[in-house]
Image (cartoon, rainbow, N blue to C red; front, side):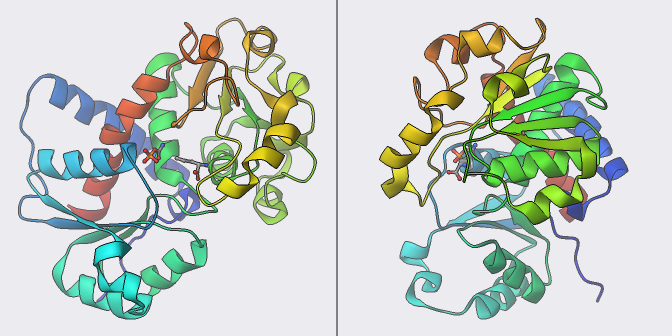
Length: 301
Ligand code: CP
Ligand code: NVA
C-alpha cells in the first residue's frame, strides 16, 4: 500500500494543490449556503485527538465531517489509553485499522511526525507547538474571498514567532507573498523555518516598520497554550507589539486584520481593531469549516 498523504505542514502540499484547495473551499462554502447536500465521506470516520483545548478546530472538523455524511470521534488523552502511556506508534496503528483519517492537536511537533510515520491513513496537524497549517488554509481563503490572489501582497506578522508565525512563513513560500515579522528580541521564529523562505521573509524588531504599507496585518496571543506561566514576562516583552489603531494607520488604507482567535483584548490587539471595520476575524473563523472540508475531501474522499 502506498504511503498516505499527510498534512503536517503547508509544505506537505505544493503551491498548485494549495491554491486548488482554497478555490474548492470557496465552492464548498457556496454549496452549504445554497443548502446543497454533498456527502463524499459517507460512512467515513475521522478520529480527532486533542491534547490541548479547542473551540474552532473541534467544531469545524466535527461539523465538516457531519456535512460530508461522515462521522468524527473526539478523543482526549484524559479518557483514552494515550493518556495512560500507550505508545504513539501503537495508537497510530490501531486507529489506522478502523478510521479513515486522524486529526491531532498536540504539543511536540515530533509526536505528530511519529504518529504519521506509523499511520496508514492521512494525518492532519490541528496545531502543534511548531505549526498550525489548518488555520492558514482559512486565512488564505478569507484573503482570496475579499481581495483575490495574495501573490505579491505584503503581510505583517506582529508578535510572537510561534506556531502561527511559522505557518505564515510557510504560506509566504507556497502562496508567494512578502512577510515582515515584527517580534521582541528573543521571540523570533525558528531560524531553520525562516531560512527556507529566502528573501520573502524579513525578521524585524519594530512593529511600525513591519506594518508600514502592509496589505494584511496579523497577530496572535503573546503566550500560547503550554506557556501560561510565562504570561507576565511576555506581557512586558510584547507591550510594544500591540496591534492598535495607531499601528493599523501605518498599514495600507485597505489593509485587513486577521487573528486566529481566541484573542486577548487590550493585549496583542485592542478591542477597537478587533471589532473595527478592517477586522475579518469572524469570517476567518467561519472559513475553518470550509477550508478543512476541502482538505478532508482532498485527503480522504
Ligand atoms: N484558532 C484556533 O485554532 O482555535 P481553537 O483553539 O479554538 O481551535
Ligand atoms: N498560538 C496559539 C494559537 C491558538 C489557536 C496557541 O498555540 O495557543
